[in-house]
Amino acid sequence: MANARYDHTGVLMSGSDWVGARILAYLFAGATFDSTNKLLSEVQVAGVEQRNVTTIDNRSVGPNGEMMGIPAMFSVTAKGSPYQVVLTWDQGLVDDQYVLAYYDQDEVGDPLGLQNNGTLIVRPTDYDPATGVGTWFSL
Picture 1 (tube, rainbow, N blue to C red):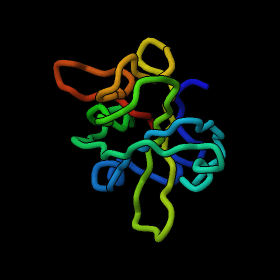
Picture 2 (spheres, one colour; picture 1 turned 30 degrees about the horizontal axis):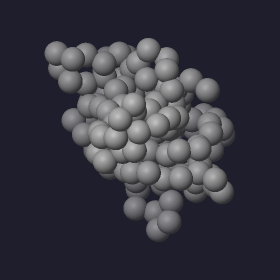
Picture 3 (cartoon, rainbow, N blue to C red; picture 1 turned 180 degrees about the horizontal axis):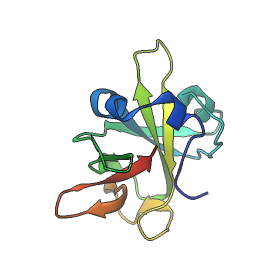
Picture 4 (cartoon, rainbow, N blue to C red; picture 1 turned 180 degrees about the vertical axis):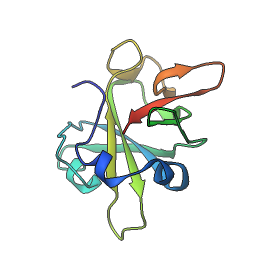
């Protein structure tokens, strides 16, 4: 599966939600993509291991509905592959969050992973090193 957003994301969220919301990036091993999933609990099934979680900061909306932000950085990540990243919108639900986008490939199309233990940096698509931001997904 290539990087993609979930089917309901465009209905669920607006640009102002993206900028003002608490957006989290979960690092998993063994997760699969189902475009019809709506909640994180639908991703966290038997056999899926949550490895880390971080926030997506410095968010903005591009001129064509691009949801932009800085890369997700997961410290203390074990070497190996493949990993998957799921972006979520934390709305304060008691036990769940809405899923927004799924990433399982890096910028050159390889599976997410590390050759040595350390920090895994997952860059959004169309990443601009000059500004430090890229497009996570478009509405």
